[in-house]
Length: 204
Image (cartoon, rainbow, N blue to C red; front, side, top):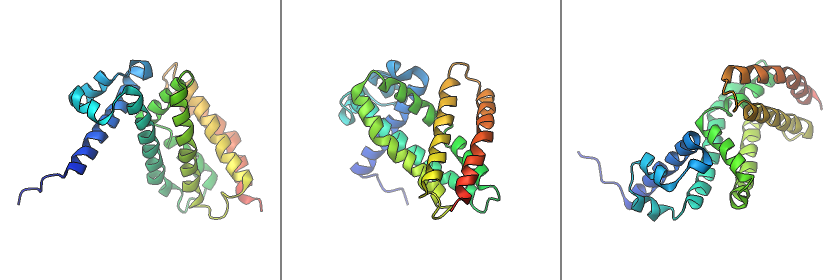
């Protein structure tokens, strides 16, 4: 039997998904300033008219892509959280999970939006709205493997400090684009972060 034709809702969802994925690709390849609706439509393989039907402007498209990026990052955390299960080194696993969920094109695009937000108040407002949700999802993923622990202020502070350190390293690494050097810097930072996380896990 031939496949049933897609509904209008399914076609709309598929088109929006193509446009949002193309926006991420465009942000990574050309940066925020070089991201245009024409380029996005070309990458998505759709007409400008079709793109304009779903998103009226670059601003609307990029703002929606910010939310799309947030969802992808949350899903990435969920996929990777199984690495903590039954780990003999919870602190080390937490640090490795943080590293892995901050890799790839999605996070590069996210950093591009962070930078663009400095001079774009509308974009900044949307990024500020979705970032706590993403950060909360990371903490929640960790919480599932250390029940009752992540509610402690000491552990939450240690996790957020580790994320701050990691993001600083990754932003600094954009200039030389040397992933191995960034990883070395993270491992050096992790040596200092691991005892704090371990102590927070053990403290009553």
